[in-house]
Length: 116
Length: 113
Image (cartoon, rainbow over all chains, first blue to last red):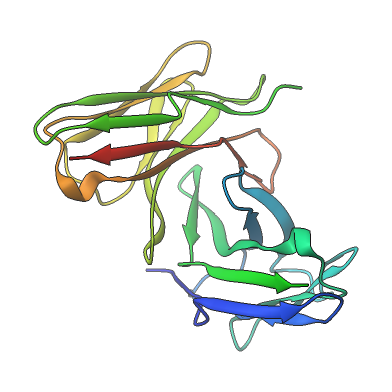
């Protein structure tokens, strides 16, 4: 069974600094997707960034980038130039297609606080 | 395009009661998934519906059930509520694109007393 582990329950970073959130996963699959979702306080969860496992190039979205290490089953999120609005719960998620449907597995989340 | 909506946003129930939560997906989305979110446990998958059929199910007791209507709206029911059912229940919809990005609703905060 697939598992997703986020080993940092809480982190903090100074505004304008860079922070990296860790995520490891366990799977025997070769084709899958990985996601980082952001859940701001009392607001809806939104997608931050996605990575297809078959792509070697790391995904980037503006200030957000990932370090995808397929062999090590690691998928970390780097936030550059942190802003107060980045304060949120961040969830790493694994998704794969199986038997005509898809299956999502989420980690337990990392609470990030950006300090002014 | 309107986002995913969930009603009600907050609920307070007592042990033994039952509750029904509702989710309206993004227009055109046929897949609706439900999750239970609790501190320290992250998001636990409950079930997924596609075209009125339950396509996937997590490891929750039979007290948790759901259904989907022809307009893709979905309901989740929890019977014989227990204190441990207190949580944020999230609904997510997705379209038919291959990457299956999920779009989440604001959630229903259920408190069981």
